[in-house]
Every structure is written in C-alpha cells, then in structure tokens.
Length: 171
Image 1 (cartoon, rainbow, N blue to C red):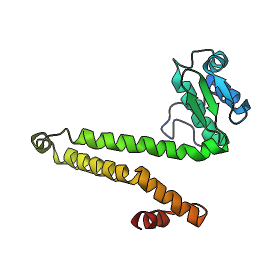
Image 2: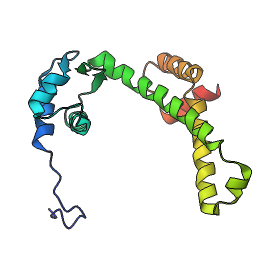
Image 3: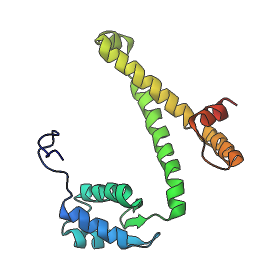
C-alpha cells in the first residue's frame, strides 16, 4: 500500500478523535432520537455550534460507513433519521437545488451585455454553461415535475432509471 506522501496527501486520512466521539454518540441513538448540542459539545469537549465542521465530518463518516443520516434541529441539536426521514431527504435537497438554481439564474442576469462582452471567451463560456445548467435544474426541479416523476415511480412500483425519468418528463 503506498504511503500518504506518494498519493499526494501529506497526512494519512484519519479522523480527529472528536469526530469519532460524536459519531459514536450519534450511532448509539435510536432512529428518530435527538442528541442536544449540549450533549454533543460535552462529548467533543468543544462547542459544536462554534465548531460545526466537527458535526459535518461526523455526518459524512456516518453516512459513508453506517448509512446513518442526521438532520439539524435549530437551537436544539440533531436527530438521527428513521427510514421515513431517509426516504424524504432527497426531496429536501431538490427544493434546495431548485432555490439555488433560481438564484443562479438571477445572479447571471445581473451581467450587462457590455460587461459580458468585456470578459475573455473562456469566462463567457463558463458563464453561459452555468446559466444554462441553472435553467435546466430550475425547470427539472419544479414541484409539478417532481409530482410527475413521483407518479411514474408509483406506476412502476420502484426506482426510475435515467430513461424512465426522461420518458416521464416528456410525456
């Protein structure tokens, strides 16, 4: 096995002990149970609200190693998601994507023609590509489109492959 310096990483990949401690606490929760920020901070030895990255690292580790998902509860702590919470999580992400895509298109519209023409071609191409993708994501993640896809998934009684998604959106 190559050492860390050979693959371009000066430090071997390992978690800080605080991340492991937080992960262990969350792992011990039953699905649907809540761990308060005070409990998490006591386990980590630092304020979780000030060192949010520790919680983010623990969440990544738990998702990758144990298929455990968590959600934040504002000013309270975190909840370990149960099966229903896991099933609904992608929809939450889609709403966020839709909002970000809409904002991206609004941001793109702030450039005047003169400003755009003064930019190098590579920057203009990047701008047009990003603006176009934001438009595609905005349209694809509209609530009406999501309902169409949910209906198609119900009719198939399972997952939709890429072709199934395209067919449902065309139809």
